[in-house]
Image 1 (cartoon, rainbow, N blue to C red):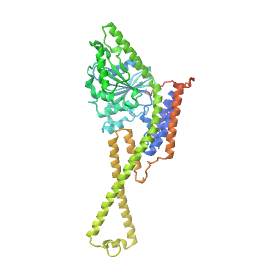
Image 2: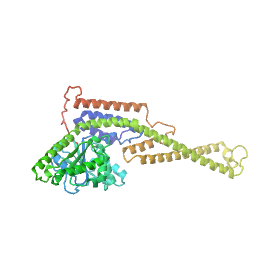
Image 3: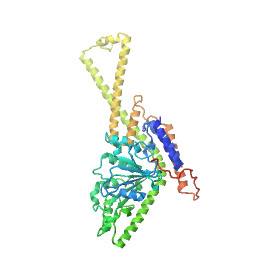
Image 4: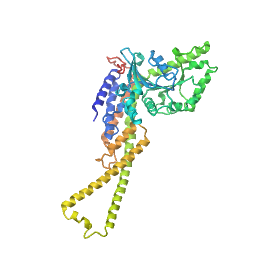
Length: 495
């Protein structure tokens, strides 16, 4: 059964989506059907939803090493000084930036994000607590929310990350970085052209480049060499670019666009007129391409959410259910094996007692010292019940040991995250005392849930067709979609 607080958050999400894209309100309903299946199997708790695993607002994250010009880039894009800038590291938090219709900028603590389903970092304190005990209570030390009246933020969320250094970064910070890369519609990875030896950043390049180019969503990563105005002062500025291109090629990035930019407001003057014109022309072209890519995420967001719906539905049936079956098979074998060991030891103890008492039988099979038990039926029945209870206790002990053994295997095989937690929760549900070890199928799984998943996949295909009718017009005929009475691009609630 769905948690009441979760229902309230989902209602709030639907209310905001209704103003911007009613199609996504229908998608929320399909996610609800998917939640029903996952809760039945045990992959989700009553207070959890697959909806919280994705970002519902278009999300752009800006990553990069210390002093790569991330904040300056964001300020230039927004046309307002939202972020503090400097030649050295000036920020050590992840900053979520969204629109404020009140016309003022505000800074809100991380708890504003931690408790709101509509934003990234929902329940991030729980994730931090799992990685490092005690860190969940320090959520404000890791993230914060800023608001800005810039119109470019309407219906959009930006995330500015602290300077990245894979060598020195804490586990919790790396976890947040990976988390926002997964959620984002677009990831801008900025590097500092002022650093002439990119090879010294090998670990950082590995995490931000090598680990991302083979991702299923690798096309959302854009690599940018920032602060190129510094290179104009070199004897051979193209050598700076060449060094970075070779460094990225060593990490596997041999194709795709590599942008070169610098902020006009923070640039150093270039004395050579022809060189200045060449650098400005390249900067303007690349900056326009980057901004155009950023503006596209509002459309891409709808496709991403619908695509995620289908992916999660197929993943449950094709991946998670077989994984749960595998865990149950391992648990079943472990329980039978441990039963054999425990009951075998018990049999050895009884046999030893028989031998040590020295031919104790008088008549029948009962030893003489147990005749008092079987002399009266009222004594025999409680005794047999006690033996049955002892046998059941040994069996459930074997079940618990097997469950713990399988849980350790899962914890080693999967990193901290929703997948590991879901499998462990499913394991606990499927190995409950009232579940027989002979149940080969996961709890709740059957024809009913298969039909629900099929309907979710069918819904996602219909949503894609509706999006194509709105944005692609494959039939060649354009029909204007009715415009809701409310503003076309409402902002996330950051008032």
